[in-house]
Length: 480
Image 1: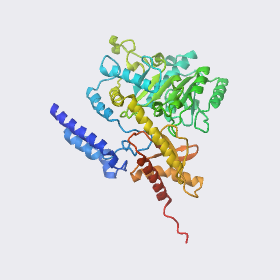
Image 2: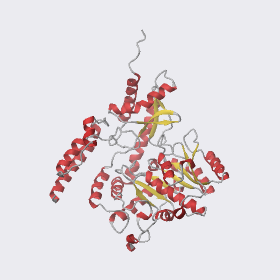
Image 3: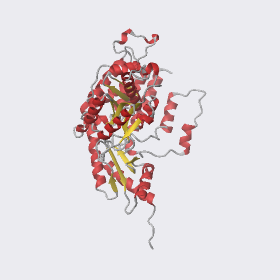
Image 4: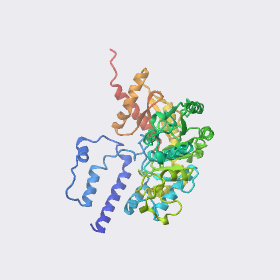
């Protein structure tokens, strides 16, 4: 392959990407793949001989690009998946061309990562000591990183060296979450040997926020039982409703009880950039750690999470292990990123973060986020004004939880319809929405992350929900 071969193919790839992005609004948001298209990918034989780049790109155009997840569309309201920021798309190609290991050393990606981690901390107002964070694959991994540091501090306070001796024989460490806490926290607790049985679910109030009085009572019960409370997980935007916990009283209790306060800000922490809802985040900066995803509300192409920790030495003491072949005097006092997390070879995530933030700037990002929250509030108003629909929670950030409520239907029948509605809407192809279970009810949850979404898209979402509900109900029965 010559450089000209690569150049020609790169131009073709750029055209494919540009055409894909430009056509998102004019195509179905998502459609099921037919059996033949699925088999082309699923049953592809291992090739014995290579194929030219031009032929590979033709296959991508024919077999891959026509079948997206749908999250690039302005009418995608599902889960918490954003459209890719164009600057991040371009930077991804350049980063792949360099292909470094961002574990450490004196090369551009390492210094750029330190800069963008600081930028992220500045965007959300979190204190950032040197070395107090790193980019990860996502908030799931960032949560493992942060909770490992919390575990190490708690074990050391109990006179235990968890790195040397493990957890066997140590009184159980206990953490506190709510029923709306993301499942990645439970996974982290299980992987770190804490056990999900020692992850207490604390009640929430009618507003969906962690009840501090219930939290205090749970801590006191566990201390009386000889257990070691060590962690509280609060949310800067729950997955179900986008609710933001009241951080100051939680932080006060954690300080009093010497507990590590971790904030799951995967999607919602960047909401602090919107002046209309910034007050909800008061006290978030008091946390010991914050996990968040630039690949959500900022639109950085997947994958990219970030772990921010108030005490960088806690992070380094949890993970640092430098074998002789990795000694590097040029690394400086901070050492390598691999001393602050689990990964040794690490991808060059920083360039797409840098490009995304630098392209929009703080003001542009804040404008995009404010538009999403305003659209969410507007969607909530449209739901409340519609007799067929019911708003199920206050719209706090950019997630709207609602359900279809057919006239005369009972609670069980309403739940049955709303359980089937998300897939029914998705298959129609015009919008994409997902469901959840909230306070014992089946609901639809529309997540707005795309600043290109319009009020017309919101109206179409509700039209499609009602049309799909009528299809599920079937034709009216002839009373005669």
